[in-house]
Amino acid sequence: MSQSPRLIALWILTLFLGGCSGAETIVKKDFRNNDNTLAIVDSTSSRGGLLDAGSRLLGSLEDALLNTLFILSDDDPKYKLKFKITKFKEGSRISRLATLGMSNSAKGQLRVKAALFRGRVMVGAWEVETWVKGGMTGGSDEDLFDQAAKEIVSHMKGTE
Image 1 (tube, one colour):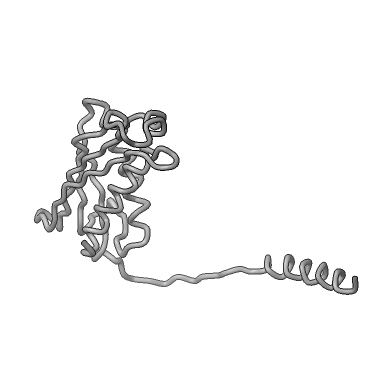
Image 2 (cartoon, one colour; image 1 turned 45 degrees about the vertical axis):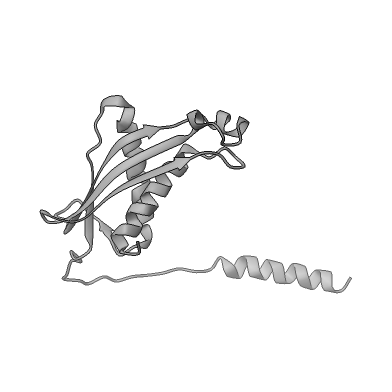
């Protein structure tokens, strides 16, 4: 019984002391980090419903690039990543669940061509295909975009 008030007091102290924090910064700089700047260019055609897929991949690429040394910038970037979605088939998540991933007609697919340019010189090019066939939740079409972005970024980092 005597430990209960101590635990409550410790919990209250932790709650109030944990919330006391702050930061202050004074910035004086005369440089720009242009070595790792990157612009992403979506060259996906608007026909065939691929334009929406292009914007979804763009969002996934931006998220995948967060833990890299690349700095997204449209202001005179050193590198440009150009991509074009050549195939997107969402598939049916319900059919994937119902058939446990056995049905090819329910399979979701995404095919992307990507190229990295330094100035006007291409320094890398990839064709990435991702798919979703099933799983416990039937797989999400968002997984297609996240996996493609992960593959492209790993190639850019030189890990694959």
